[in-house]
Length: 230
Image 1 (spheres, rainbow, N blue to C red):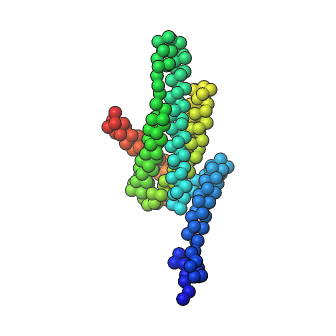
Image 2: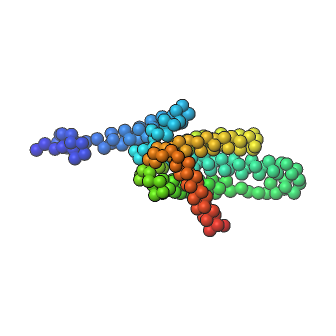
C-alpha cells in the first residue's frame, strides 16, 4: 500500500522519510536573512516604500529580531554614554579628589548592559501596545498587533544604526555623539509618522494625533513605572 507524506502529500517509498519540513525550515531561515538585508538596505534607499513593505504580520519574526538588535544597540550606547560622560566630567574637574574617586570606582558594565537591554525591549512592547490601542480603539484602524509591531520594528533600523554610530563618536566627543543621536531620532520620528499611515486610518489629518497621543500615554506609563521602582 502506497504511503504519502502527511505534510506535503509526496508519495514515499517503503521506509522513506520525507524531508519537506526540514526544507521548509531552511527556506524560512533564508527568507528571514534575506528580508533583514533587504530591509536594512531599503531604509536607506527607499525608506517609505520599505516601511510599507514590512508593515505586515508575516514579517513578525523579523520584527522580533530587529527589536532585539535595537535593544543591544541601545544598551551599548548607554554604556558608552555613561563611561565617556563620566570620564569627561572627571577630566574637566581636574581634582585630586575626583581622580582618586575615578580610580576607585568599579562600574558594573555587564549589569547595566542587561538592564538597558531589558528596559528598551520592554519599552518597545509597551509603545507598540499603546500605539495599537490608540490606533484601533480611538481611531478605528487595523486590528492587527503584529502589523503595528512590524511597522515599529522596521523603523528601529535607523535608530539602531544611529545609536551605534553615536556610541563610537562619544569616545571622540560627547557633544558630537549626542548631536548624531538627536539627528537620528528626528529622522526616526518622521519615519514613524509615515508608518502610521499604513495602519488603516485613512484620514491623514488624524495620523499626527495618533502619534502624539501614543507618545504622551507612553511617557505617562514610563513615569508611573519609574515612580514604582524608584
